[in-house]
Every structure is written in structure tokens, then in C-alpha cells.
Length: 272
Image 1 (cartoon, rainbow, N blue to C red):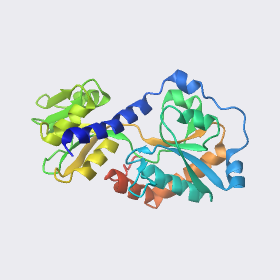
Image 2: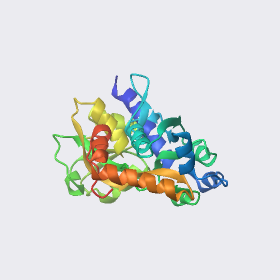
Image 3: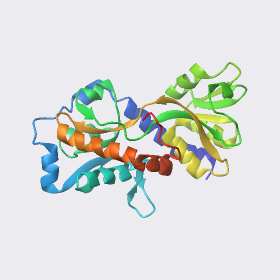
């Protein structure tokens, strides 16, 4: 598979995340939930917790070789189900329908939800359970640990994106920022050696690390951060407490770090 084909696949992950971070206020406001029974009681009575996940968004959620869902969020869903003593029913969602699914009680919660002021008007957020951030990636052979180390090096980005804005603010004058018309071009440039470094989300970076061992890529340092939360309907304090307890326990016993290493090929950030 050539670099262009790989880039086309990887950019779908990047664009999906960008769309998730840019949900408009009017779209979110239109799905405010109605009065309802206590969600934790409903889960306890049915013995089932319905968790909305993406199945086309690796490494957080995708269909594996065995045709079963796999990824960071799938493991997280199972962890939450265990904490609630309930069977997990994975509900496949999209960026367009998932807020409505939550409001309409088609799901009890959503995973991979970025916290925004617009969303906070109609849903509540758990504590963060997974890192999402923009980062600089490059081969292990290239010594880069921070902004200053970009001096004299070339960095590929998509023109006008958050990646472009973030790296442009911190790169020293001698760094060469190679801007491409779309993320496909930036990823392909890095994979083909036209640029020494690449700025993408940690999800796309993890896929590059897993699929291109010949380049021996690694994450160098992070930039903009927007971690993932569990999204719940408002006024569910008992369920929220259970979810937050599960997250806190998984962080304390090292499970979240294990998931981060397994799926994102990086340690869980200490400040998550």
C-alpha cells in the first residue's frame, strides 16, 4: 500500500475528530432531553448499559479482523459495564446522530466526547478518561523533544488547520513548515520523506506508528489538548458518580495507562 493510499485512510480519522470538535451550538441545542426515569435505576433493572461508540474511528473504535468491535473505547465500555455490574450493549453512532441518540434514550452514555461550551448546555461530562491532543511525530532517529528542537527541521501540516496554527506559534524561525492543501498531502509527505516531522492528532499518529514500522515513528511532544470524556444526559448524578468512580479506579490501578499504551502507543499523560 503506497503513502497516498495510507494518507487517504488516515485523514478520515483526522477529519472525523475535527468534525467532533466543531459541533455547532444550534445542532446541540436541538437535542435537549425530556423528563425521564433515573438512568442508573433503569440500567440496574434491565441489567444492560447501552454505550454509544464509533466503529470507524481507530484506534478508539473499529471493526477488527474477527469482525468484532475493538479499540480504546471498546475496552473502556467494558470497564464501565463491569463497574455497573451490567451487560454492555455497544450502540454504533456517528458524529451527526449521537447527541440525538443520547437525548432520545437510545444510549445511556457516549464515549469519545470532547468538552465544549455548546455541548455543556445540554449534556454533562465525566472526568477525562483518554487523551486527545495534537502532537509532533517523527522517526526515533531524529532528536526532537520540544519546540526548540524543531530548529532547522521540516514539519508537514495541512494549511490553515488547528495543526498549522498550533505549530506556527511555537516553531523557531529556522524551522521549515511545509503546508499542504489538505491532511492527505501532509501525511503523504511525511510517509514519503518529503518532511522530517508531522503534526497530527494522537489517534492518527498511533495508526502511523502501528502501520509503518520501517519509518520507526514516535511521538515527539504534544501541542493542543482536548481529552475524551463520557457524555451523559443532564441530571444523572448517581450514574455520573459511578462512571467517575470507574475512571478514577482505572487511573489509580494503571488500567488507563495500559489502554493508552496499547491503543495510542504512548503513556497516559500525568495531568489527565
